[in-house]
Image (tube, rainbow, N blue to C red; front, side, top):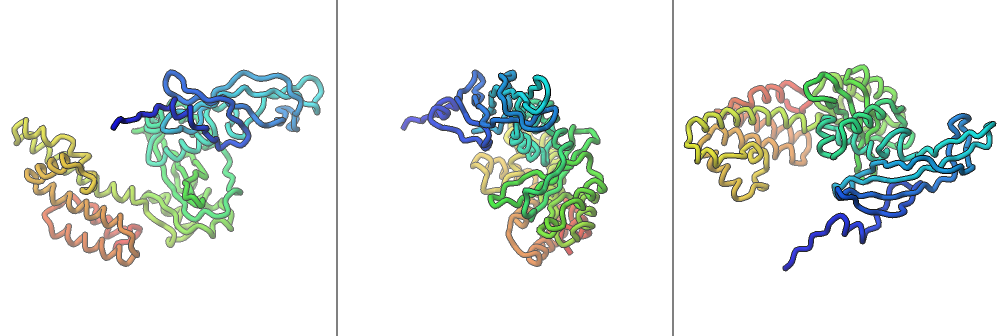
Length: 375
């Protein structure tokens, strides 16, 4: 049986790509030498607001310079829109006042579409600007510019009939710097898509509180849960506006609390084994960090053999890994709050009876922090 490999160029030849931008039309499509998708488009609009008086200018008066604007990726491949904007002469102003067409799908002076900007804001959740730049193959400056424009944009909630689930998360603009931005998102659309409704400079409680209070009352009543990390500034802002009943701690941040001590134990044990085992035997344990982070059913046969070898040499790490997997299983199980609390308490007792000590701090957090629903 032969294997057929479709290149982007082949796919593009057969596929007409629909855009989520009603005001433009695709004229032609191609790929460049880098394999990037190039879509030549034209505007379907017949007027633009005059930059001087603000009234509609409708008299065509030539074209402006051709622009290349990056859009949402397709098949994990960068997409560029190439457009020659129309210029319009204003019949309401004296003299030959002309204005280059303004787009409703890209901010003035931006080299990316609004759709891509929103996508980048979602990718920034749990990531830094540098991370997103590398993952999305887009320059650091373009991500930063999109972020700055998002911060400066006035929030418009008129298009939302309900908010239902809110998410609050901060990210560092640069790793190692005390420079944070807060992203507030919602998951209220029928298709379950996450949309960013606000990007706030900084992560102070007062800034988040001011935004939450600014949400119209009819939308506040539709909020069923607010998912956030354990940062007190976010937690207290949510409680002050919505009460404790809607607060949910993001499991991503909870899982970090028990995975980090497991990682520290792994590093300690690997150092011990490196000093103890022959070099050829120790080499069989390479890549254990990712193996320990996977669910057992996701491991390949080779990875399972490596894990069994590690268990043989480090019973302590085996016991800790077993506890971590059990905890992940609890968090992955759909159950009531009462059942969840009971399972967590059984896990705590099991961990406390074992010889494993690396989870001691995490257990203290579980017991003392009511936000994690553990009595």
